[in-house]
Image (cartoon, rainbow, N blue to C red; front, side):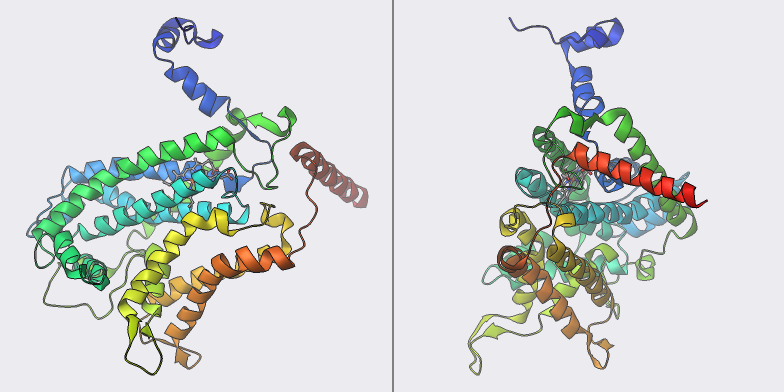
Length: 442
Ligand code: HEM
């Protein structure tokens, strides 16, 4: 017989009784309270927990909205208006949910760029990263379907543009589109299935979050130095050190989130979505939510067919090219752990990587700008799309040229510190010296 799962702290009272039968409390204590973390984790390591909290906010407000929403093309728009006007605090629940999506993406984007900068995707955390990319894909699908539900003009036409992309698939494209729609146009079956999947996917994301954190706890967190933990001196327990840090992070998050919810609730949305969906009137400028804009820009950046020049032979037409580029931009993240061949994780010790990283970040933000502008916009007298194409080229070059081929050859990494605790002690000593010098000056 195996030994009962008791620990001295949980052996008494109701918790002790429960824990000796189903050791959930000791599991929580081991994986949350006592879990050893590198002691140099910065505020950049708060964004994982913030993403988890944002996910919970989205699920709770989503369930409350679903209790009043009607997934029917004749009633969806009105049911959302009723939530805003007649349901007690319906406006608040809806604004938290709609702005919550934006903040969820913002937090996850910072979380991803943090991982990229500090090399958290590298051995042994490849699977943690890949599960993250899977969640990102699920988040994109969930957000896209959620945006269709209010059945406004942007909902309808956004859904039309994106579902039509599947028609670019050779031979079976049109069949796939009709299968997605559940008919010959976007209609009630489409809205119904989007509602069903929009309700389901967040719970799938929760399941993947569990695997993400489980995989992370097997290998332990990376840290700003990117070096491995060498001894117990390099670590501190999660509680109280990081619980308090995360609580401060949450307070800052809630401050900015509240500013949007209470003072600018429609700032991040599109006014056309307050017009009921009309299949006979196409809006002049169809744009997705801000968090999709860089990918939208990549989709539109490919305006030419790919084939044999000066002949009519086309291998990939412009539409399929755009779709493949957009899809490739996300899928390439899955193989990132094997593209970056430098053994050094943290960007702090990789001077050239740092430059490439910041250019990459600027390109992503710039692509967001390009995605928000009309397709025929002009910059410095040239079509904006050209700049979009250039930024797209850099996006891919970063992954398939710079990381695997250029940087390993030309970069000279800075020497790594011997251990986290040594670097930590050096940092504290430097701060003390700085303080001493200031006091002496005064
Ligand atoms: C629903 C979305 C997500 C949630 C709730 C979530 C949650 C977390 C949490 C709680 C941590 C530990 C704390 C931290 O390191 O900040 C973490 C770590 C990590 N996450 Fe996520 N995550 C999400 C999405 C992603 C995405 C999209 C990626 C990348 C594509 C990603 C990659 C990573 C990596 C590499 C780590 C390890 C970081 C390190 O140790 O340095 N996560 N995540």
